[in-house]
Every structure is written in structure tokens, then in C-alpha cells.
Amino acid sequence: MMADWAMMAETDAAPAPKKGRPGFDRQAVLDVAVSAFIEHGYDATSMGMLSSRLGLSKAAIYHHYPAKAEMLRAALDEALSGLEGVLLEPGAREGTAQERLAFVLQGAVRVLAARLPYVTLLLRVRGNTEIEREALRRRREFDRAVTALVVDARDSGTVRSDIEPAVVTRLLFGMINSIVEWYRPDGPESADQLADDVLAVALNGLSAS
Image (tube, rainbow, N blue to C red; front, top):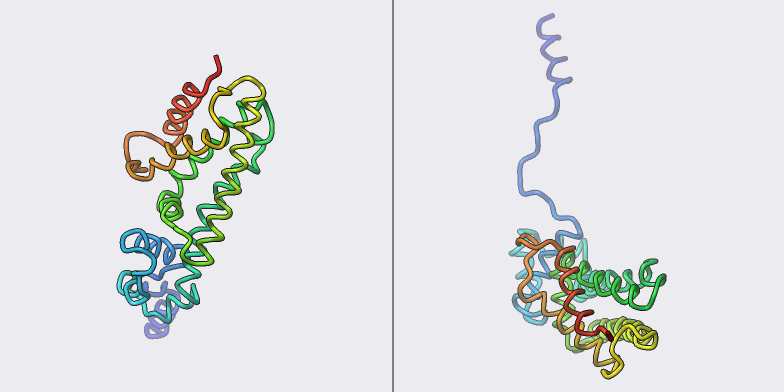
């Protein structure tokens, strides 16, 4: 009888936790790949290097991404989809021209802060591959949409008319893009505060009054 109770206790007991290195999901693999691409450059990053960093076999990595190029495509899309998503939000479509422009600028800063490594990688592509050229095309489309907002704000008399709108867009995003060089998400300034600071500097300099 005691033996039977012992067997039942063993059956009812929770299984012992499995030991070993935790697994990596698709996003975690991509995070490590992006870090390596930034540190060493895309071309110089090999699958062997990623395998070593992850502690996974190449076959395990291929389970998530069939090729290194697919990691690059996914990483660039992570950055671009965030920026493009800002343009689809109500704040980018409703209100005065100045309000819409302000919303997009703040939104772009928040995307940069939230997806810092991915935006950093996007800013470093030079169009050496078809994937990079497509990313640059999407980025130009985003820039054109921002330039259109600048034109609307200029025509409504809320921003200066003596600077070419396309130049304004380049200057604005020159400032925003420089954030990747020094901003740290764990630093003293939150993404929301950073977005407010960028907006204050940008619109004060562009104000028509």
C-alpha cells in the first residue's frame, strides 16, 4: 500500500524543470543579428558569427530565417514600418498643418527611441543590395510625405516660407537621425521628453512669427 501511495505521489508531482540554454525566438535572433550588423557591418557578419553569439547551430538559425538577407529585410522593415505607421495615425491626418507636422516629427522620434538598433541599421544602408535599395525607396517616400506636410504648414503661414520644404525635411531629420549616436533608452530622458525637446527646437526655428 505504501508503495502504491509513493507511486501516486511521483505521478502527481510536477515534472522537474528542464535544464539547458533558453531558446531564442525569431525576434530574439533578429535582435542579435541587428547588433552584429551594426558592429561589424552586414557584409562582414557571417552566419558562423551569429551562431557563436547565439549559442545556436546554423540549422537552428535557418529555422527562423532561411538566409542572412532575410534578417536584413526583416530588420529594415521593423524600422520602416514604424515610421510609415506614424503617417497612418489620425494625428498625422487630422488638425492643422502645423499640428500634423508636429505629430509626425514627435512620432518619428518615438519610433527611433523604441526601435533604436533597427533605425540605426536603416540609417547605415547605402543601397548595395536590392533589399537596401527597396528600403531606401521606402524611406524617400516617407521623406516626401513629411515634405508635403512642411509645404502645407508653409502655405498656411505657420512655418517660414524662405526655406525650401525639401531642405527643411532634410534638416529636421538630420537632427532627428543624429539621436541614434547618443540617445540611450535607459538614460535620464524619456522618449516622450525627447520628442517634446526635438519639437521645441524644430518648430521654434521654423516658426513664421
